[in-house]
Length: 464
Ligand code: ASP
Ligand code: MG
Image 1: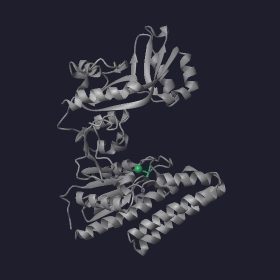
Image 2: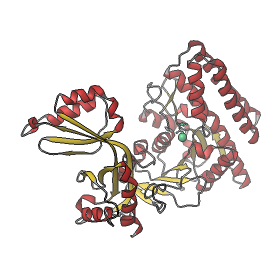
Image 3: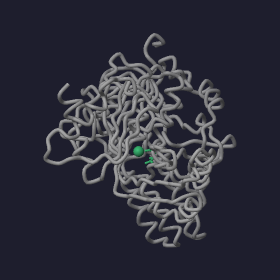
Image 4: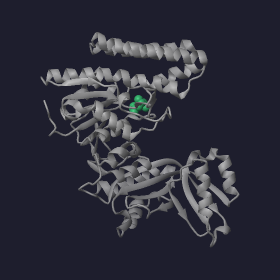
């Protein structure tokens, strides 16, 4: 059966979509209904954290406690295997993976040490097991629907080649493409559905690696790119991206479409959405990304695309809490050059990320995460350049949209919106506009941040 005319879809199901038999079956139904050819999964909900907990005990030499967690993990997984009525071969494969985990964690507890290489092998077991359930669940759904198609359990380590930075390994795209074209052609030609693991990879010489916590979105984007997929679908437990955090603003609405650039601004400025760095392969290869809820697959969800038909001035707004404003002032900056280079050189050296910046002739102000307090050495070095002032308890409010720096009257609408009535005036401590056509952000006291979002959401989204 060939279906090359159909869309080639890679989908990824996160931990919450893999919570139990019911959730996995629901996810499998989604994968089949959407016509996915490659399905990558996370570990079942909570498993990765459990593996970390187990290893933490083992590192202290507390074998009994480590064993306790391992037993719980094994029991839960064997129960699931039973619920899915896995066959002997599948069951023995899961048991082998669990034995591998047990051996490794015993080693860790004897050594009272766990290097990153061992940790990655331990971490990989969650995804390696959960993909067995998903394979079976998809096979069940296909059988129910009388669809005759192979569903293959695929070990992603054959294809997801990375370097050896264990714990956050760097995928090697050319090798991934090469191996995918060797092993995954059946998926491409519609002859099989591949069920495999997110997050997990392998060095060229076969050592297990991982891409870092939450890495399975990245896995899915890379595989989509490697096999030339038409679409990437990320299934989670929220029906896409909302105009703002619904906990702050109950009237937040789902966004149907958003560009990669806007999504990048949104994620950087605090929205809990897929991090665009993990979607970089999709952006690079222009693969539209869908984000939806496997719990409510009938809801529209969000498409992240290179271009959207509708480009509203303000599409969404985000809040980034726990910010500090660091101001460095020195008359030496007057008509001089090189000050900013010195200052940012230091931030680079201490690996501190700066988000919003404004300058005047003799001072520069920038927002940083409030953990800057702990960077005593950096602060001392900055003090040797100028007078340093640190204000905390601030939040960045950002409006994300299009043509933001070329729209007359926008600032006026924003500030009128902020001060709608004179019950409570919102003080704006700093404004950042001009660098991007997609972002207007400003800094307020944290205790006024929710109010600012509510008022602006009303002005720009609810009243539209
Ligand atoms: N299971 C891994 C984690 O929890 C990877 C993922 O789910 O994306 O971080
Ligand atoms: Mg996850």
